[in-house]
Amino acid sequence: MFSSPSTSPGAAIVAFGDYQPAQVVTNADLMERVDTTDEWIQSRVGIRERRIAGPDDTVESMAVVAGGKALAAGGMAPEDIDLVIVATCTARDQIPNAAASVAAKLGIVAPGAFDVNAACAGFCYALGIASDAVRGGSARNVLVIGSEKLSDWVDWDDRSTCVIFADGAGAVVVSASEEQAVGPVVWGSSGERADKIYLRDHKYLYQEGQAVFRWTTTELYKVALEALDRAGVDPSELTAFVPHQANLRIVESIARKLGAPQALVARDIVTAGNTSSASVPLALSRMVERGELPSGSTVLTLGFGAGLVYAAQVIRIP
Ligand SMILES: CC(C)(COP(=O)(O)OP(=O)(O)OC[C@H]1O[C@@H](n2cnc3c(N)ncnc32)[C@H](O)[C@@H]1OP(=O)(O)O)[C@@H](O)C(=O)NCCC(=O)NCCS
Image (tube, rainbow, N blue to C red; front, side, top):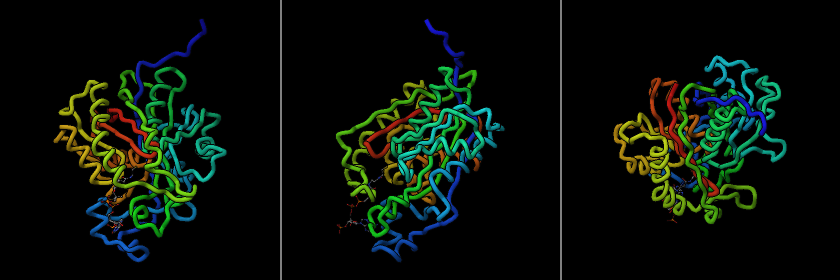
């Protein structure tokens, strides 16, 4: 009926980039502010130190640096990009979105540009959308960025949250490819549990820690296994598992249930903290940079968070 765009047989991640603020905040630093201990934080959450934004770091500025690094790593010029998606739930302003100004600052002229708010699952949602856009012919190359400044939304006198959350950004470029190297996204939500993580008084992050912990450790391995199944990948074939870095105990609990003992498990949280939608691309980028994910690696990603929402997919490292 209508002419349709030329579609691509597949979509693949072709490059990674990341950004972390310079300021390191250790558990000892937090002990000066709230009644906590290094032992409590490391044993309950698994964080040793985290990065917190400086006065000049914003969701947009961090996204620009991570996105720019991904473009450079992929040998891409700004004019190659025709869609920019920023996954974030911590942008200061509702209007305008972050993606359009991030694109402009990167010199990308008039791309499609929108934000995705699926909290800590945002990157996995955005990656699924980017892959579909490329395969459907709506874009040739998509810049997908997760960028978060959680420190703006944390009550620094609340010891139950200030020890967990942090700031940073990670990015990938998704491009047309002969083979499909981004597996089908498995996404879903549990909106009846919206009260488990939210902004209290529209100001500070609040969570029912134990309820969230239970949900993540009893339900989410099923989502991860479904993503493997839908991609036709056996757990024994996995090179690595890169879940949202919410809490080391959650990461390790889900990893144990995958039946993939050979898979390297991302433990970026130890030094990066929980950076919401930035945590998966940040961990991926750092693992690639360290040479832990050689070309051809099969990696399972899993995002989950406020909503409650979740998403997972398998990717092949270029
Ligand atoms: C938040 C979390 C670490 C708390 O651990 P927990 O074992 O459930 O701890 P509780 O909330 O039951 O609190 C136990 C005690 O530790 C105390 N506590 C909380 N934070 C503390 C801190 N930073 N230092 C020392 N004590 C702390 C509590 O006040 C409580 O004290 P009480 O027994 O005297 O009342 C844990 O529930 C969790 O990780 N949940 C998942 C959260 C998450 O990952 N969210 C992100 C999803 S995207």
